[in-house]
Length: 580
Figure (cartoon, rainbow, N blue to C red):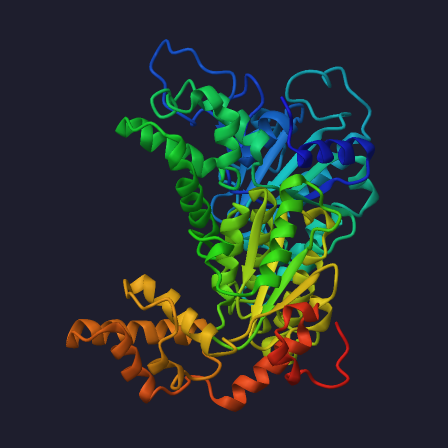
């Protein structure tokens, strides 16, 4: 069995004496594949006489108790709902004089009991062994292996102060001391703090330099494939159509949790509906969006760069990047793009076309900001973990000037903007993501995005988008968008239209015009050219002229290559503005 990296790291740190306290964060609520021959007992009901498969799914405590801590004498769990529980070594624990029939459930009482028990074990370790020291249940002279698992540790030790009636700082200090005081370090002690997001955990624990912070990642293709092989005997009907190529099926579903996969297979098995290859992309979107709890959504690109009107130099550049991506030649592959230009110039549309051309999923970040202290940072942690598991993808951040935060996030947002900026800057410059995650920022106000976030190594290519620059281009844009409404406008620009075509029509404005023309054609029964002529008579650009000129100038100044800027718009370049 291939063990998760975090499990191997725990083993190394603990056996070497480098750490005895471990913060497990990330995908901690998911199901995990248990080692061979180990069963959680609740993964799947079995009929009498059924032969159990060699692998089962269990939760994180199952994995820790049955594998990571299999040789420990006593394993205790502690959480806000159930209080203190004995997961292993119950007979030995019950011989402790401080053990009671009803273990405590309030935070203060729980920590006091655990601290007393640990100190008792430390004191007994130095006692001379007696003749019965090797008998079952004897404490004296033994250096007991003891583990404590704090489940949902963020509820016991929350980052936000003033939310509880007990002395939170004192309790966090006690737990922290177990990783610092010499007598605890000499004891065979392992403490686990399980919290999906580190930012939700009390800073005394989250920032403890003696605690190892280990991320439980979402299952990748290899782990997903192992899970499929383990579950195949349990769900034969659900997997009968894809059972011959489970590695490919696993790769197509990478990014989903094993919990979501197990639920899907149970449902399909019950209904007698086998998975089929064409289901997988839609199922992956559904499962990942469900696990992400509304933080992201998948865009479904059904178009390519062929659908983009004009922008020849831009399309050529992006097609070259896609060719490098497909060949695995990543040295010149950009880490990210910035699409900038006036409102309505089709920034989102271009993202979808690029994704369709590349054949990779597009993940759009939704509103990850939250009013609760630490929740915004926790949401970003969850998003980043998801991106690492998805494989090749495009991450789209619309209105990036608002979403990405500011380096000097002021007191008005309690510093959230500054922390968002710091987290985004770190993730966008992670060179391990080159060729795996392509960041695309979109904004009509690129000047409001922090310069450091737009620098090479985070955003390597800045592409300006502009409105139509002349009558022929304007008409071509309206005609192309009219086809979506089944409007048949002549290919050549009619003379009756030429004189009334407005300047600087954006794709958004052109689509609005096409819909208005369609309405006239249907309600009045007039010819499409006549309807277009009527619509243009009193047309008013939805974006004021001064705003349009300002946003055009910003896009020109931002462009990473003037070849992206049509000659007609270069006049708006601000003199003396250097290329960023």
